[in-house]
Length: 85
Image (tube, rainbow, N blue to C red; front, side, top):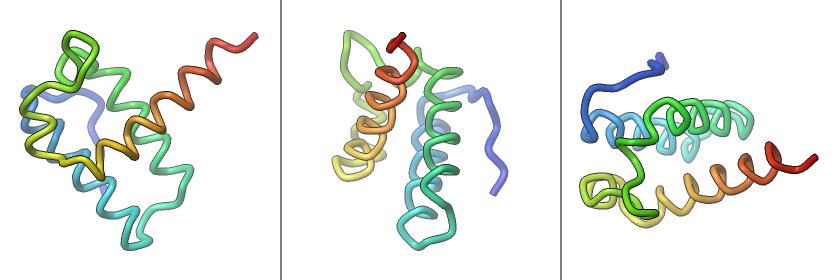
């Protein structure tokens, strides 16, 4: 699966997040690949994913609670890892 670094719209970001998480759920991606892809997309497209300290409406509608729960855990895990001295 080819994952780009930058996306034009929130719908494109939501679509690729769905693909990544779905591939993980059917065992096509390892834990490490899931974390790497989600982190990269988040870091490069943060303005399309988060607004006012919450997911954007389009991201919420397109991805759903279960997928966003996984994304939230990965993002929280990685930000703690980065900020820990």
